[in-house]
Image (tube, rainbow, N blue to C red; front, side):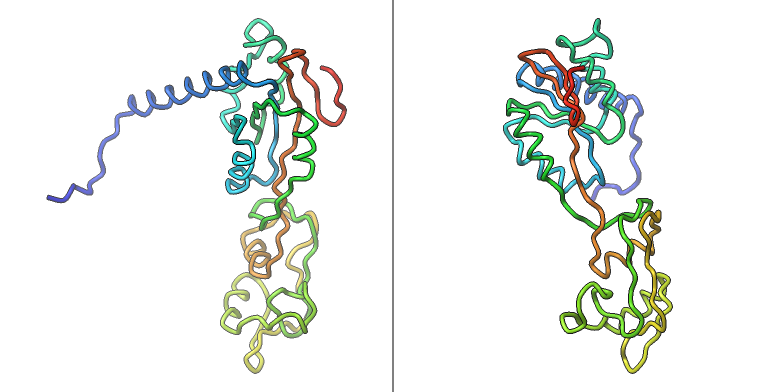
Length: 236
């Protein structure tokens, strides 16, 4: 007999219990990692994409990475010298705000900093983010890359997409089966906060402007119990 598809009652006490268990598990895992590895790095992420964060996790399979739940991570490190799990770990807690995480590793700091300085992945921008460049589609026949390539290296935009791009704000029309603009059309300018129509057009024309990047903010050494900031690299 098939199971009923009616919504089942989930008691709040059960969800709260599960949430507390996950919090305790994260707290314990952070402290366990602090005991196990030689360094603890605080990193921030620009233009978060789960796909690229998975790549980072894979690259550092010999290490331990935590992302999200910054209050729990900060509490595990210690918010004050009296609460800190290990000497000076509490100095990292002030960096745990926003899209940040912890990387516990025994790799030397120079290799970590060098890796992330060169690790940048480009992706399509999302609505609500700022445009990093200007994108203008030339007048005339609209091509699949919107003028990003020379016409001889490109192909005209399929006529079936004319209704779609017009819905997204482009003042196009069909002329002898081709999508045409009478005047150049500015999709976005540098610094614009992008809306959903702009991001849809950027993606359609293959213009990727968002950069997924990991920025190391500071790190702690188990050997010296020192905390150092990235860039200035001065002892806290």
